[in-house]
Image (cartoon, rainbow, N blue to C red; front, top):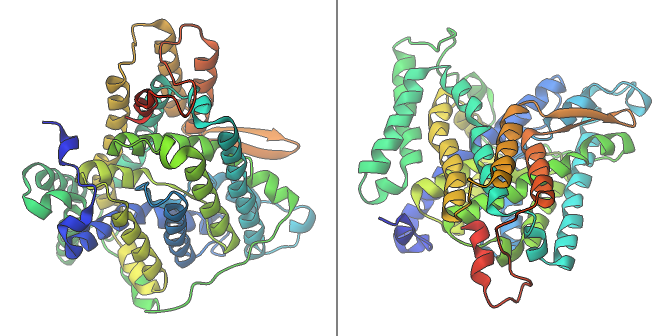
Length: 456
């Protein structure tokens, strides 16, 4: 059966109660990874880093801003980007110049200022695309490049799923089993909220196991509510205004090269998932502007950079509900939660093992979308040039698990494996002879179906 025929484009047909649940499902999908970034950053800055409340607020507002700029057409959620973690760590360790006598907390605004500049660089690429046309840009990103890139997005996250699941395999397998059962055999509304059901049922099991005295594999408690107990019910987010310094900018801004490449891959993956050509409409320039401004806004108020989230792309594929309104509901939930440290801590107590079990499905779905991208566009892998391009992308994207770090002018810069894969794939496809994929000569070409194949 062609599953595309049963996809729901307008969730209002399900009714508002069901839409609210679907939004909650997307919120759970993004929550774990989104709050993990400030937790890791706080480790670099010895507890004086980025606030979880500010992070959730930035993610929610950034997502709504992205939807506004992209004409409310792209069902993408923007959560915290892991690509900038290396930059945060570098700035935390700076001890020369103006940073010599600074406390860790005083360094954070300068790191955020670098994020603002990184976000603004998105606008430069968007302007180039607007001037030369998306068709000319996408000539460098045929399915032989985008397909393996999408595969890498999912597969590169696989170790994270295993690591989280291994903390308590029983809970991870329960979450995984519940999702499979509801997705395959569920009826009505339950069939389109398998992720939410996986979270709820496995969390109830976690409460029971914890009460019975069971522990995680390392002997730690399955659930820890100590942070939630001491947290306030309602409080204003502790915003921090960014500051600018050339050293911090040179650390953070170049990372945008990597995240912009990842953005193109993510938008291609979302397009392939929902069967729409978002590269053409609302346009790659608009999605870049939306992502860039969301990142700049987050940095301006003391939050981490934003990026389109693969977890939520997996939810789109699994639920078959492709209405951007549902994503906007998730964004509103994030904003509301950002005003309540207690509720944020309660949801943050979700065991890592459950997140790992859920990730088995979500990350695998993303990789499968990449395979579908290659198959549906009939990429001929019997041709050596296509095989070489795909092989280099896959090995680079998965092999450089820690990225590639180099120094320019005494500043350490790290390109992620995905960014390197995109760069190598684009360059190889451009220089190797024998291209067999045709693109329209202009945006107004009568045969727009060819361009739509990019993201089908």
